[in-house]
Image (cartoon, rainbow, N blue to C red; front, side, top):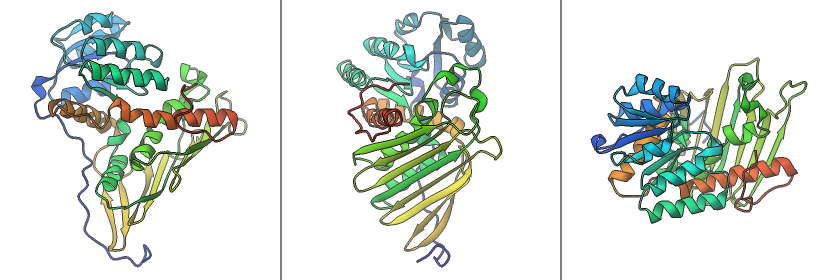
Length: 362
């Protein structure tokens, strides 16, 4: 039955909205790293009614600024280890630069704090596995803030997959066209793999989650400059992930200065198709097509701030329910394997096997 002749069916109820903790008062929150992104982390914590106990940043003024904005009674520290030494803090959220993040995660786990890390939590697969073991040894949770999982369109996609609405996944195609030239003059413009690492890591994570337990066999990636591009780093990238009996493709056009920012996705399965297009990060609806008919699923919310509320809410619920969170670090290693394989493929021009590329080279 084609989309034009399909009957309209009822809108399915998808579990895609962020959920908060059941007992917010039992959690005492500490933030390490008070840069720009920390505002979204702290907004999420405050929205749940969690007590923000302390903030730390090597730039003490940055910590003071966030204190004044979100938690006037919170303590501030220039040395994060003073924050970790507090007995009252139960959860630590780390949003520092990747160069220092891994050591801080290890210190937090040794201090027996439940730790939520900004992505990526490591650029070394073997080191990541050691951190997973350390968390288990100290009986604390280690989660990764892969907040795209709660962007409404991605969360609805994953909800449809969990509900079995699409059946066995055949293909997942995601594409975006936007202007990322705002990085001119910043440190980001020095990252050779800016698009495939710092940005695309969310899309690798969505691909890994959509295909579930199916392991990727190869990853092939291209990354090039646009004609007459003034930035030194490649701004055009595409990736093909081969799951053996399924494919995921991801296309990034980050030098688009003429057209409004846009994004699209299409997931084809044995029982249904889910697709949508719209503004970058803010798809207003998805179309579900099955043998029973077709329906438009309107979406509520936005990636910012819902993505951060979703990750924190899931992490806290897992602590309350004494279970492994769905954003646990071991789960996230699969997403990092796709990302690191893509980086190596773009450099070599050859397909790479996920898991064999141990280091994510920027």
